[in-house]
Image (cartoon, rainbow over all chains, first blue to last red; front, side, top):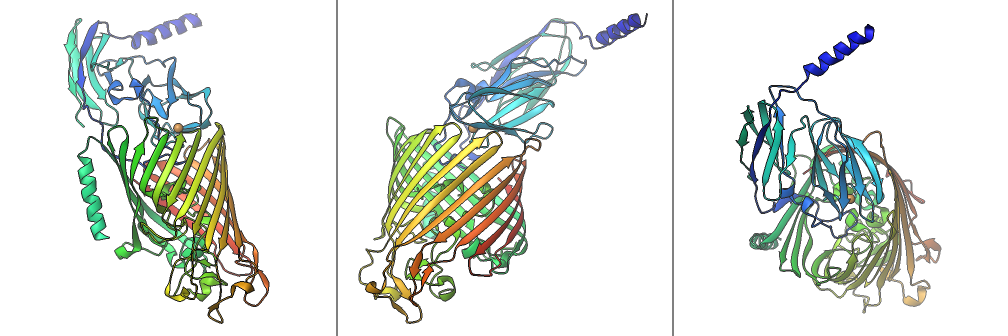
Amino acid sequence: MRYLILLFFLAGISFGIAQPSGNNQVFGTVSYPHSSKKIKRGSGYNKDGTRMMHSDDPMAHPSNNIIVSLHPQSFEVEVKPMRDASITQKEQTFLPKVLPVTKGTTVYFLNEDEFFHNIYSLTPGSRFNIGRRPPGNPYPIQIKRTGLITLSCDIHPHMSGTILSLDTPYFERVDSEGRYKITSLPDGKYEMRVYYPDEKIQRRNIQINNGQLLEQHFEIKP
Amino acid sequence: MKRLMAFLFSLLCSIAASAQFELQWNADVHLELTTVGSDSDYFYNEISRRHRGLNFDLAQANAMATAKFGKNWALNTQVQIERKYGLRAGLFREFDFYDVLIPRLNIEWTANNPAWKILAGRVITPFGKFYAQQNFTERDLLQTPLAYSYYTNVSETVGLVDSLGEVYRENRDWGTPLLYRLGYTNGVQWMYQLPERFSCSVSLTSLPPNVTDDQLFSSRWAVMSRVTYKPAYFLDLGASFSYSPFLKRAEWNTELEDLSGFYQTLAGFDFQLGLGYFEWSGEVIGAWYKVPVFKVEEDIYAPEEDNPIDQIFSIAAYTDLKYEFPFLPGAYAVYRFDVLDFNKTINAEEEEINWDDRVVRHALGFGYKVNAYWDIKCAVATQEVAGRDWDLSMFRLMNSFHW
Ligand SMILES: [Cu+2]
């Protein structure tokens, strides 16, 4: 009997956070500036005096690191930690430059260079320092807060990466043409957010119902 | 100086218009509580005894610009403002407390194979590990090693003088450290660099690495060379060499006809070993001088036949042990053992003595990175000079705000 009550109770909980139904879609484009910043804070060279390396990998470029996310306002949504979330350090560059994850996800850091890298974060609520890490050996860190978490390398001060930790499962990386499409969205009100590396997050409120296809365009201004 | 700054500014503006231009900048402001020993001096331990108490000032600011012209050419500039001589500087002070330096102003040619490079113009002294200490924010212990900053009994205008600092305190000079008095030099630098694996550079510069003069051309040219090698991902090795004529003409050394035979030779070796949260590094530098011996009491140079030892030698070594606390991200502790020693020579009284007094320094530092713009650093040091009862102890608690 006790188990039956417990079962009933658990069912009630799962009902309680059940998502509203609906199969809506939000799509559109994000346009961004084509030249990179010419003036920035920095020390100009590596600590050991060597030339800085920069990867040509597309995932290092800001245009491939724009994240669109939809945050439900009118209902609660269950957010599960993601699997296989990882950031690679290659040619003194974080790849990808921005990694979107859900809160609670364990991110694996992998050094694919032939020399030491370090990763530390001074972001309150997610401070960590993984020390000097040799090539290979993925190192796990669980992300326990939401928001932007800035990653740095103590050995190569020009290296900078970001984990965008989200309280929603509805997000997508904008493609290389600047397009995005988020599907299977329940009916309701949402806050839309667009993150472009090192810029302020743009926000917009929307409402979608009855299998709606909603078009939304954003423009990032430096 | 004003004209040079105006020239640099217009140069920066014109290259800013070029397509591949980038400007990086940083600045470091300190709020610092200091207690230093009663004999502290910039020339002994890099901090004046006048620097006691609470201080707030701009320690250093840098602007670095690079403009690329096509695939092979680039122009590099760096302008640096740095607090002069560690003097006390309050909120209201004269601008004279600052040095405006130009660490870099050079043209860079990179071959189609980017490992090969030639720089011409103003460069950072290409000897040893100086670039790692160049910016204040990168100094864990606040002080630089003794080899970089302790002024010895060798003067670039007089030669070897016993107790030089006390004798010439007022009118002539304080001698020189073994290297990096200015930290920057002018010349041509040839480089072969495979980043994080191997590098080799040979430079012909206009000045020895331990003088403050700043001519574009001088009779005291220097040849410097540096090789670095990384045999494994956890180990960095480096070796440096420098040779240069050392003595410069002054009104009090006209007694010496030819200065070209007096020289300084430097050889250095450095290493860095890393493992997880540990870092062990160090540097050994040997300095050989051939300089004239000046007899202060008689106010004349010792005749050459009375100078049985015409080559003097000094050795400087330091080692750093650094540990980052894994349970307190952003925090570290660092310990440095630093020693500077001198060989024996015959003084004016025909006694055999070391040509300067042995110096030993122990330094311990703690640091905490609060965020990307704010560090807290604390350093304590004791410094003993053999045969002297100088109080050169130091305690500094610093809030370093940087942009
Ligand atoms: Cu790194």
